[in-house]
Image (spheres, rainbow, N blue to C red):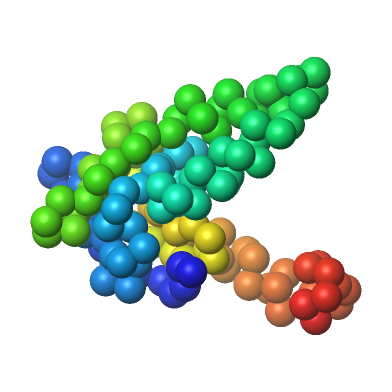
Length: 143
């Protein structure tokens, strides 16, 4: 499970060092793809297979499912961390998420997300107030 917030730097070759707490789960390989809100989703290879199995169940007759599948999978890139636990973020994903040198990597349960730090701080500032003031059940059975 991916938890926490980390602030690695993007190097001149487009690589980041994976947070130490994420390495065991990601050492066998990862899949990065476009995430919602213009971040990069990072899945372990195993978890991405589970996600793909669910996507394959979507009806081909649904235009919304086809559109989502195309955007999600066309941006996907399988990567393997090197011995220094660095992984390259493909240029198309760096561009999509407007990633510069300062990054924020967050744990989001079954995946990690890579954000431009300024974009993350803006998103978090906006969402923290919504989170604190939530008065109804958002996730069934949680609260």
